[in-house]
Amino acid sequence: MSYQSPLFWPATLKGGTLFVLDETLVPSKLKYIPVKNVSQAVAVVRDMKTRAFGQFLVVLNAFLLELNAKGDLVAHLEKIANQLNRSRPTFPFAEVTGIIVGVAHKAEANGADVRAAVIKTVEGFLAGIRGRRLERLRQIANIIENGDNILTHCNVSGELAMAANIALSEGKKMKFFATETRPYMQGSKLTVWELQNAGARVTLVPDNTVGLLMAEGRVNKVIIGSDRSAANGDVANKVGSYQIAILAKEFGIPLIVLSQPSKGVPSGDAMPIEIRGEGEILKFGGKSVFPAKARAFYPGFDVVPHQLISKAIPIHAGL
Amino acid sequence: MSYQSPLFWPATLKGGTLFVLDETLVPSKLKYIPVKNVSQAVAVVRDMKTRAFGQFLVVLNAFLLELNAKGDLVAHLEKIANQLNRSRPTFPFAEVTGIIVGVAHKAEANGADVRAAVIKTVEGFLAGIRGRRLERLRQIANIIENGDNILTHCNVSGELAMAANIALSEGKKMKFFATETRPYMQGSKLTVWELQNAGARVTLVPDNTVGLLMAEGRVNKVIIGSDRSAANGDVANKVGSYQIAILAKEFGIPLIVLSQPSKGVPSGDAMPIEIRGEGEILKFGGKSVFPAKARAFYPGFDVVPHQLISKAIPIHAGL
Image (cartoon, rainbow over all chains, first blue to last red; front, side, top):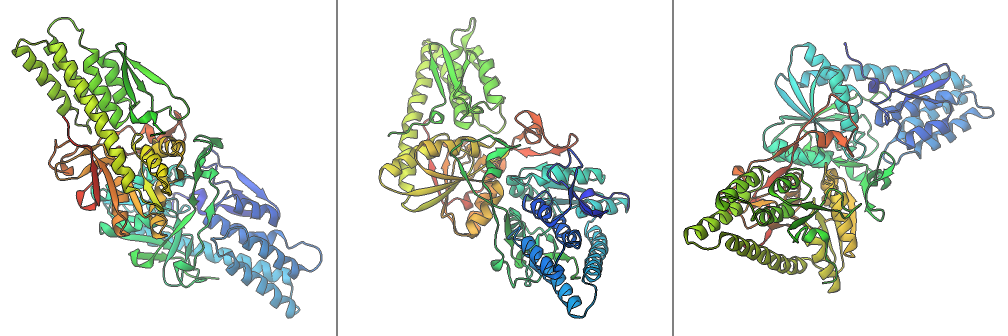
């Protein structure tokens, strides 16, 4: 594989410090935020310095940052699990944090080394995730066919760009449309940059052009990621995914979702939708650009019901 | 009527100069661009300093600016009609410019005063349009019901806000959602400002939240304007209107369109879609904010087929 995106693995532990790619600065800057404890970990998650997959890496690695705590280590790990769980309502961190706390409890009960047990579990998770992500790249590359015009929304943390790079190396030709993805502009900032670095052709479009692109036959496939999956196959993803899914159905265009292993909820109805601050819509680059009195509404995610998903490419459960 | 929006009548002739509201600066500034001849008129239209309705006012008034030309006045009016027709591909300026040139030819053939004939025609048009726009406000106010949650897209040049003001004065309570309308942000800049000044409650939402708002039952009515109407009832409007129309159908929400009288084309298929410069997507406030190499695609308009329109409120033909 020739192209590796910094977004593919945005948080790496080195010498007791977790280096987290500040995805809000990409592509202007490749800056890594040093995270040394759970409070700093919660801050990068809550401030969305890194996104879905990076947040998951931060949550896992946060336990490794706190193993030198004094006093009752198991009680301490329970406390940091709670802090991490509360950092974002949409994400099911409790599943993985619960497993790690469980491992610590079991080690303590068995008189084993709690520290070693937690390290082994977290490192095992990380190795497994990396392997399964590399495997999924292969599956996404297989989905891409010569001549495809693929619409994507938001950003799937390196996977789509790296899969495109594999498909290109196999002689397939394809073109991407990336939605801007208001208000964070992940499409404009991350997806366009990644796909270009991967050697792929990509055109940026406003979120409101999807219907026109489809009606004009400019798109024959939609590939999006997801932040969370329900047991019935519904997924939560960046707001806008749902209306793209309805439009794809209207025009008979297959919708492919890179789904998550989580089975924490039975269906999308049970997934809480996080409402983000309205400042994210009313400001640009930190500056207020619209009428001061304006009110705004920014639901961070929406749910795509499984009936609208043509094919899910899961990351196989490894927790 | 207590609230009158500057957008309702954005171009007024005074003392030989046409004062055109620079809608790109609203609401930060209420600046009027002085337009003294047809070249300046073409420039404000081409640069979209004013929008659909304002452009129509500019095209009409441009003839009054050129009545003191030396030489063959009728030939001169034909020339400026051509210049105006070429300024924007989506808009059917040829219809109205053709009528004015026709009036000039007829006056000349009858030995009448060409100048007086053109003035009478243009002023007649302007008076008729104003009367019909005031009449339409009443119809829009009647459509608004107590308790409505109304989604709108882009901006309808004062009409929706002034109609909301009438409805409010009748004791009706309603709430609006305005899409941002990328990339020009007419929703953020114009619609929110106008509706607030009219005393109405309005919430700004990204273009990609429409599906979620509808699925959650937060919207029970959609009211949009249009730039152009076809004989079969199809309308061209700001890009994004089409996908909102599909979503409204999906959720059984009525779509009301303030339509245009033009019957220049049989159906939406025959309306050319103007492709605007990609800089409008890649820059913000004139500054490049995304990867320099990025390509973008910005179709300015899309077409809503008449089958998706629940009710059209036309401006009755007066040309």
